[in-house]
Length: 560
Image 1 (cartoon, rainbow, N blue to C red):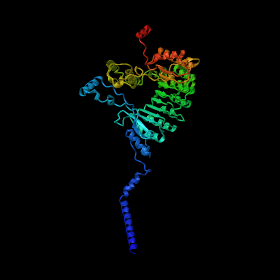
Image 2 (image 1 turned 135 degrees about the horizontal axis):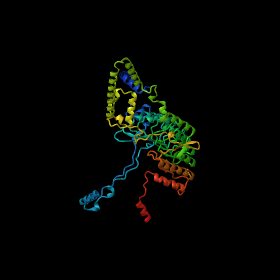
Image 3 (image 1 turned 45 degrees about the vertical axis):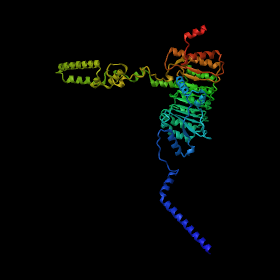
Image 4 (image 1 turned 90 degrees about the vertical axis):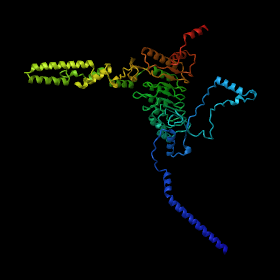
């Protein structure tokens, strides 16, 4: 019985402890009810976070937006400084080395016991960095800064080998426009879709200093690369190497470069090397170069361009006839611009009025006549007074014109007189003190400013009932290496370059130099071909880095 009584007492004590523990837990929950409620509210994914203002520091803004898009910390790409190759250390000074050796010899007279010189040399710099297992394959964003200690000075962004989806490009859309010094974005093998390219095209113009964009080694099935160089694009350099671009994508790029009514006026360099562009695509790009006068460098290297594509490019560089649509657009531009004779007809001079006088003079003469009729008795006196007043006003006006006084406009001049005076100050230098606005010369008079002329408004030549205009002489670099161009295509290119040279000699222009460099190596033509060699000779003299041999060197070579 005693054993059973002891067991029951133990059970009762255990039950009491359990009840006390529950009471304590209940009291603790009541005390910390508010804090747990706040934690639950903070962890609630449905709660809308407070708006975030970008700081311009890419790493901080990018990480914050990734977290707000419910990305885990191990899923957020790290922002790291782009590794640079090690610099070459300058060789040690010979004098300091000799003095150091002499001091060491004086200190240690036993040369046999001296340590090995090879062990004192610095180890060679490493060109690699070791990482943990699989860390190399994790997505990272490499950046370059003007000052590594200031993260706000990011100038270049590099992304390598991981897919950029709509979520990530949406984060970039919020971060990149706030980076003031961002000028270069380089993407490689990022697997973009058409929707992602559209997003890029929508916010890249908002980046104030972003001028260079490279998207290489990236396949897009829709080939909608032309969206990146639309009319609102501010890019000056675009690289689309090894993207598998076919004639379909080349046609869209050609239309983005220019049409009859639209034109890209900012893109300077376009690199399309390593793609699948044939003669059809080269013809489309040549079509886009007809009205484009901004592109300076074009690369179609390592494509499938043959003689037909080379002929179309040569035609655009030399001269070409206008199509019917271009002729209609030219007539519209001429009618809108108008000639000086048409302007005179539209706005007739004031001398065509009924009494050949301005309105103010006519009203004053009418008042003089009524005054004479009323005061016939004082006609002589009034006439003398009027003559004196006219003489006084004439003398005042002549003195004001001689001194170029500023009060002429306030002494009764009309608005038309003011306009003519302003025009005179713009065309003539009068020797009086003028404001900063008056000192500015018109664009046509300033020698440094070169007015951009629409190609359709250039001087035309009528041949065979067609209007011909000069071709594109703004492009200075063309790369057609590693294609399938034979001697026939080389002849067309040679004629185009020769035409540009003759046109430049007839009408020299500092802004229209024509082709200065043309890369043609690796084509289906022998280097000993006469046309190829002649084209290389002509291009050699036009190369801006070409230095002709001096006469002394020629004489020495002949003497040798």
